[in-house]
Image (cartoon, rainbow over all chains, first blue to last red; front, side, top):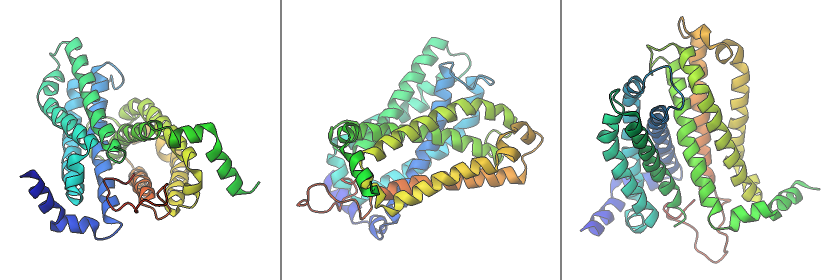
Length: 154
Length: 180
């Protein structure tokens, strides 16, 4: 089933649009970069705060609450532009081990962000637990970015 | 020494060779460069969005600015140093790439931007606490435009015509999944 679906994606109108000129794909990719800078950047600011590194003039809970809308906007941009790029060459991405690794990291990172991490940024979470959650969050998102970079190589 | 000779000398150094043909170093440097973009870009977006009054408007600008500053510096150092090493690996190709030159021009303009807006915005962030001036908002918009332009031209370098496959016989890359 998936391969048929991927072939359909490759032939979809948006896939053709991305391949229509040499400009469109890099522009979408740039938006993808800005999207992950906004989401992963703001997530990392909060994670480092949970670890007691920087941004100490406000509580982790306040910082997380203030940044969360921007994190979500970044995630939305990422999740729109990513599948668009995927569509242009879905079958190749599907079989690419770096892409598979990236998707596993992304699934866990998103799940983690909206469950355990949400709990950890609350002010009543024990500091050790909050620290562990922050390290886990940083590792998962770093895996997403690094996996993305490796797609071109493996 | 002509410029071509200098570029060829760079490519012949051990460091250049190790990054270009060492297997792991090139993708690892690329990965760290990208992680630094996420980090530096995130802090940069946050501080520019604060100037525009959209992010954490209830917090004083100077308060956030001083807290962002060390993180911004660390991110900048990592993104620039990994970028330099990546460029050191293939100076001949980059020299012939128009997109590389546009990217470097934008980078120079980032320096001009910092210099132009130092006195009115960045040098004394306390001035913005009473209310962000329109000049500071202009600085934020220009900063976002310059850095976005650097990301775009950085990506375009990978899809450049000058980006020849290393082995002459291989068919040119048509799939973005296989491109750099």
